[in-house]
Length: 117
Length: 112
Image (cartoon, rainbow over all chains, first blue to last red; front, side, top):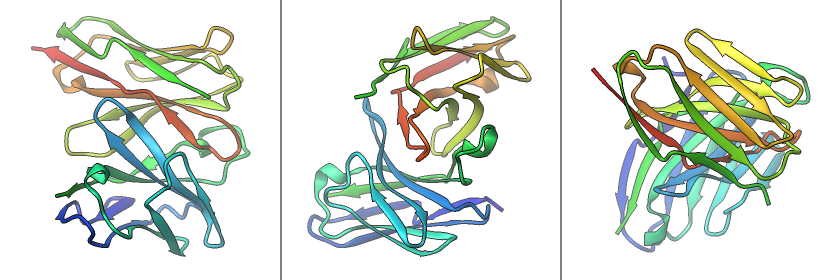
């Protein structure tokens, strides 16, 4: 079984709809991240969380919100979807950093392809 | 603001060739640098992570180097195989938060 899972894998919705993307991990990591990927722009950070009580905005948080329901679950919501939110969305996890070594490695889920019409 | 650039955007090589992918970054104050592989329809797979105090890391046919002072990293792939065909992304980590800034990737095609 995959360590980081995302649901749904594909979603088509209409402008103005509320959408929730879910991420679950079995790696036992404290840190979770949401990125979006657009052609020609690379991956950009939306939100990140260090634990259930610590949530932080990333580079492009406008139009998005998140919820960290448990250590293993981190959800991304689009309150009112718009077409320019059409993208590939990735969830990632990493262990607590501050230590040298591979604890900083981020592990990615398979992605959710979201299309907003 | 940190900017990460990967050149070339696309590369096609015959099987068996050794190749180098390039990554450059504008701010040398990085915490680490990671190389990822992305296959179509799949997520990113971490290949190598280099801490800022390190100069290189090796895993199998892959070798990644880091030169902080010049703001450059290279990923060397030895004896390339068709299965190496994918998009390769580099990302720099900027501090204890481990937030990553990504390049736009190099699309590699290894021809049999």
